[in-house]
Each structure stands twice: as structure tokens, then as C-alpha cells.
Length: 455
Ligand code: BES
Ligand code: MN
Ligand code: MN
Image (cartoon, rainbow, N blue to C red; front, side, top):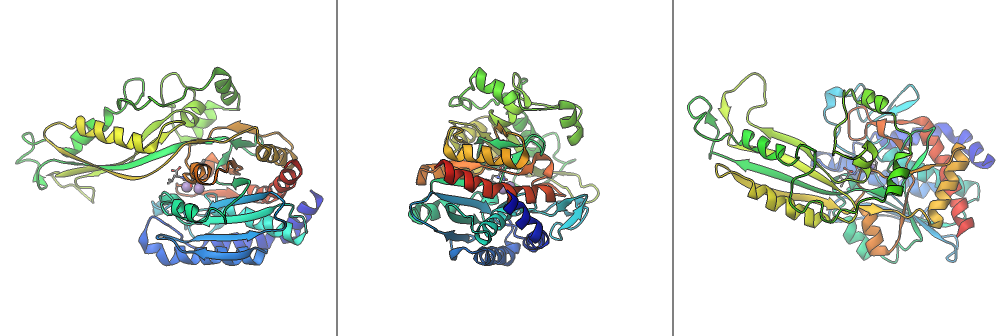
């Protein structure tokens, strides 16, 4: 521990400066206008892995954005850890809500404000620096492989192909990922599950063109009204989802599992205050942690129709659209849910409109084991670094690759995230606490030490 803390102390400023350089690349995978920047970010990541001491570093081309690979094999009889992260980020919009520009990292009150500060540049870069630390202090006790991708925020479509084609190269005893949240720095936690995802877009079409809303209004169905009604009907009065068969494969938690989940500290007043809401909302009969961690949901992620520019325009729109996603829990399958949604949405469409459903991407839910050597190593590392034992939680977000690693490589994952839910991931003013960044760099070598010792 002394060695670790001393190394971090001596290299503090450089470790932060390098993260800032990484954050300055606008590596938005969703928007093609950033293509050159995304590619530069891959090159920067590869260069930093090389500098830290990784061998066989490669920017692996895919049909989309490249995957950065690097490794250090110290002894083939020792266990191997595969570190996964992503160098792409979410779009920064709406730009006007950022206090400082999203790609000019700025420190305020001990926190780094920038798109990707927490999700996931700040977090995956801790692994690069922890690796450097272990190389420089001669304390790397395991083999290590890095796989940092550039399409996580758009569904990791090319990663599956890469994993299938590189089974031998990616062979490992555990996958280690820092791309999730902790409850707080005082109550560290380890996520033991992630929800799956089924993402799609719907289009409702009424008349064959936009109409004068005075000339035709009242005689022709308005697609915006119809779409709103259709969407509203997807939840009943108890906030259950109304799609037939939607819950068929959902596994109810045992009471003991529910109790464990609900024993984590939760202050509803603080929760509401942080979000500026007067009441929480959700499926009847479930607590907030159960709602986000163990229950499937359906959310409208975007909705548009008609005139949304300055001033007013009296128009009866021809079309109305929405982006809708459903979060899935074990043992739901994203293809099946996408199909159930598509059938249901087409069925409930009234005869005045036509409906088109276009699937985007999906990912499968996972539960990660808590009785594995790797989980215990993470538990112990956090206990040593934080002075408190971590609480197991279920994450509400999705990382599609986790289920894929399990299916394709037969390797389980440890989700050792250091973010906070309040870090504003995907929102304006995303941040990451400098304290968490260094704490992560301190905890990761302890994970390796414990994993090697327990293996
Ligand atoms: N890092 C997040 C997922 C996450 C965040 C998990 C917080 C647990 C806690 C990841 O980058 C992400 O945003 N994933 C997407 C899914 C993807 C397919 C677009 C998500 O969850 O919406
Ligand atoms: Mn992420
Ligand atoms: Mn994300």
C-alpha cells in the first residue's frame, strides 16, 4: 500500500494531465462528424498503453471504430485479467447547458467536468495508470490484457465479431471493468448485475403531407396525438408495462435477495432533492433500488413531431416519431422483447395511422457471481483502500459486452466502478471527482495483488 500511495503521490500531476489530454478528444461515436477525433482517441489510447509498458499494442480495425488491444504476459502459468473499457463518449448535447465546454476539461471544487470524465475515460484510464504503476514498481503479479473499444455508446455492434475472431488472444480468467457507479465514497459498493437493453424507433404516419391545421384539423387524426396516446397506454395505472408477455421471463428476486438489496443506504429525501422532483415514480410494489436494479422498464428517450422551431406554425403533422428503450432483467432476451414490442405497437395502432418500428441495438442482462475469487479480490481491495467493506448492488445501466464475454469466452466479469450516480453520465456537466480517480488507481493494484494471492 505504501508503495502504491507513494508512486501516485510522485506522479499525481502527470496522471491528471494525461487524463485531461484524453478528455480533450471529442470522441462521440454516435455522430459521424466526430469520426476523425474518435480515430485519434484510439491512437492516443494505444500510445499511452505502449508508454505504460504494454506489449503487442494494436489498434484493431473493425467495420466501425477500432478496438485498442495491448497486453503484458509475465508468466503463462499465472492468472490473466482482461480489462475492458471504452474510449467513446455520448454526444455532449444540449451544449448550452454546460457551464464549461464539454471537451475542455475544467476542475471545479475538486471535480473534473468534461464529457467522458466518468463514462468511461476517467475510469478506464485509471487502469492504464495502475498498470504503469505496477510495471514501474515491479509489482504486477498477473498477466494483463487490455481491450478498449470505441462503440460502447452505440451498442458495441462490431465487438461481438472481434471477440468471436480473437478467442485465443482474449483468453482470460476474469474480465475487470470500471464503468459503473458506487453508492458513495463513504459507502463503496460493487455492482453485481446489469440490465439488458432493447432500443428501437417508432414512426406513426397520418396524412401523406403536413396539413393546414385549420383547414383539416378535426377531420384527420393527428399523428402526434395518436403517438402520445399509444405511448401513454404502454404503462397501466400501477406503472406496469402493458405489452403482453413482457414479464413472462422475468425472475422475481427471493425475499432474502430483496432484503440485501434494500439494506444499502438510501435516503429518499436526498434522492428527490438531488433530482429536483417532489415524488419518485415507478412500478407499484417495488422500492427504488428494486425498480432500477431488478425490474424491467420502458422509457421514451426522444419524441418529436410537427413544428418545433421559433414562434408558431399551425400545422397538422404528417408524422410523429419516438425513440424508445426497454431495460431488461435476467432472463429476458432482447430479441424477444423487441419482437413483443413490435407486434404490440402495430396491434394497438388505430386505423387512422400507419406504424413503423425499427430496431436499433440490444444487449442482454447479466448477474455477476459474488462467490468467485475475482469478486473476493475486488471486495478485499476496496476494503483495504476505503477502510470499509463494499456493499453489493444491482446496476440499472447496461454494458452489452458483459453477457457476450460470458457467452463467447466463458469468462465472468467483475464490475469495479468508481463513478457516482450523481456524476451526470450522459447529461450536461458530466464530472468525475479527482479523489475517485486517484482512489481507483490505488485500488486496482490491490485487486491484482489479492487476485494473484487467492487464485
Ligand atoms: N457505463 C454505462 C453503463 C452504466 C452506467 C452501468 C452506470 C451502470 C451504472 C455505459 O457506458 C452506458 O451508458 N451504456 C448504455 C448502453 C449502450 C448499449 C448504449 C446504457 O446503459 O444506456
Ligand atoms: Mn460506460
Ligand atoms: Mn455511457
